[in-house]
Image (cartoon, rainbow over all chains, first blue to last red; front, side):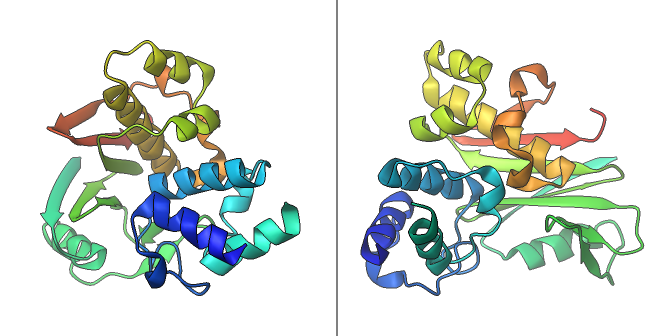
Length: 74
Length: 150
């Protein structure tokens, strides 16, 4: 799952996979803008086949948070 | 009062300092609401910041304000998930889908940032077709500004 999530983030943002790790903060380390963030959420939903509610987005701050969220909810 | 300041290649912190200095605010403390929107402590001046790539815009006002900038783009999956039925129809019927998508996106963001609730309010709970928020664009860079009660 970690590899898949990092690949999706890399595809959405154009950031090389090698520069992304579980501790990367989406806003402060990867500098995601809000449109990048919702694009990422939409791509992840498509990948896991399940909706991620808006209220849950606030809880997602790092790449590791995304991986944990998917593992818990997919 | 509403002033918009635009900068290139500086941090949000620097951009805010420069903008507030133009309003004679040189010493300030930031406080945050429960959704993370920053405010000046003990000061009736409001501000909001937006950045995209190397551009930063700071809006300063005596009212709650939200600003958003975005380079022209089109994200069909974002439209499908986060836009209202009316917004989707507007984009689908537009000859320039990138223009329509970007204009709606910056309006949504500016409105949510004015409210100070961010994404938790729900992007699809905002129907920009019914909101009177103007969008300006300088070539491919689009900007929307939303003032409280506007």
